[in-house]
Image 1 (tube, one colour):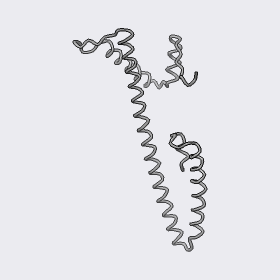
Image 2 (tube, one colour):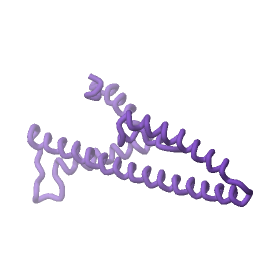
Image 3 (cartoon, rainbow, N blue to C red):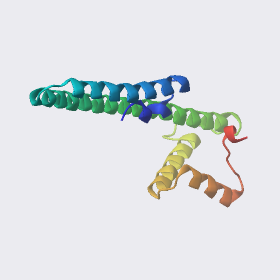
Image 4 (cartoon, rainbow, N blue to C red):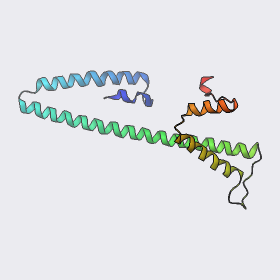
Amino acid sequence: MGIGKYNSLNVLSNNQRSILNKVDSEQAIAEVSAMINCAGNRAQKRRLEKNLRKVEKIQAKCEEYTRAKANREIDIRSDENFMYVFAAVGLTLIEDYRWKEDPDQDHGQITSFYERLTKRMEKYATQGLSTNDMIDLLDEKCGVRLVNSKDN
C-alpha cells in the first residue's frame, strides 16, 4: 500500500515522493518490528494485531477517499476541457463560417451541428472506439492527422 500508489497525481515533487516512500516503508517496518518485539505476552500481541488491523482499515479508507477525490477532480477538469472545445468550435462556426442561430426557430445550424456531433460521439463510444481509434479513422477517411502539441 503506501504513498507509492499516488505518485501519478503530481501532488508531491519527485524528491518528496522518494523521501516519503523510504520513510513510509522503512519506518513502518521498524516500528512494527519494535512493537512485536516489545509485546510480552499473548494478550499484548493480540491487542497489537487488532490495532494493526484497525490501522490497515483506516489506511484503506483514506486511500479510497483520496482516489475518489482525484477522480472527481479529473471529471471536473475533463468537463471543463470538453466545454472549452465545444465553445471554440461554436465560435469558429459563427465567426469564420458565418453560421447562424435563428431565434425564431427551435434550432439553427449550430444547435443542429452540436446534436449531430453528440450523436456521433455516442455512436463511436458505444462501438468502443478509443481516442487513438478516432484519430486513425479521421486520418483514414480524409487524410487529416491530429497530433498532440506536446509531440511536436
